[in-house]
Length: 237
Ligand code: GLP
Image 1 (cartoon, rainbow, N blue to C red):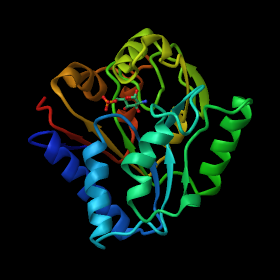
Image 2: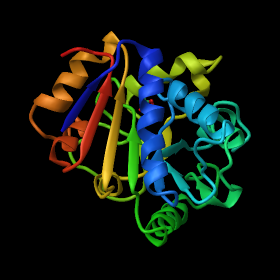
Image 3: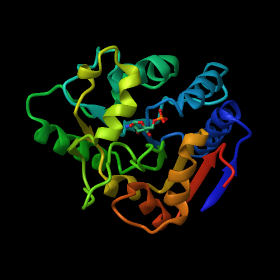
């Protein structure tokens, strides 16, 4: 594991963007796994700047997002598809048919999960997976549980996650109770993983993730078993 320390959230975004830029320059046809959340916003902003300045290009890259809420259409302002369009897809030269995200608004979610896994498989799997960290140790929306799901699946969000997400919705009753998420297997099969963690509130869970026992109660702890994990954080442990 490599541990990279950033002074603050701003430099975390810049360092993450430079890290990803190096990967794209080395492999322009990279398959990227992408997160949402407040942590990666700075990274997307700097990547867009590097792209607009012509220093990097995503024309040959492909991206797969980790997760999406069940029941929200792609145009819903709180959907992850909307977030990605707003912060990244519309700002870089990624061809429209090179981006994918699970759909949470289709009638048959089981079919959608299979479609998503097949799309990742036929792209050759994830080359570089970027992750945020949930307050309860979730990655994507793989929540603490008695077991770990390997492939894309529908998940019931925990009360803690619903509570954490309430800040984004005007009405707490409107916070989705379920999500579609890439499974832990697809994440762990990535060649490289970059975990982004920002803010004091994540100190305890980052400690458990990196140095606690590997178990399904802290899903991110499984990252300890990955051969090429980089942790970029503004928390000094
Ligand atoms: C959501 C996402 C996760 C993300 C987490 C942390 O639950 N499903 O993929 O890592 O939020 O978000 P933030 O960066 O806002 O703390």
